[in-house]
Amino acid sequence: MRILFLGTNRELGLFRVEVLENEGFQVLFPRSKSDALSAIEEGGFELVLVSYSLPSDTAQELVELARQKNPRCTIISISETGWDDPKIQPDASILAESGPRGMLEAIRNARDKRLRRIKKPRLSVILLQRLDVGFECL
Image (cartoon, rainbow, N blue to C red):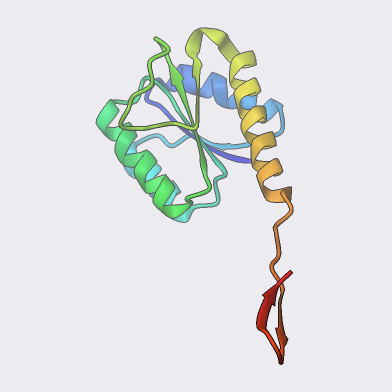
């Protein structure tokens, strides 16, 4: 799974990236807003992890662009207070104090949910034309 990590606290961000990479995730942690915009434009991310350290307006802008680029992308916010920024509307959120374990659990839950969505059987409708009744739905 490819993850885009957005945050401004470099030291804490690098720690989180290391934890994720040790678990086998591919993670990109842009150094600046312009690097984040470029990464979003390149695409290929299945999940965006948004840290509370990112200013609200910047987070909103980057999340909107990520959703435009990939509407199926999962957004997870890391919060200091447990309050989700209504402008971002993440698919899931975790408290920063839950640490690496909470972060990994949220990402695994999002991945499992995504896999269930992909593997879900689709209902097929077959129309048969009959000379005497037109179309019939089976």
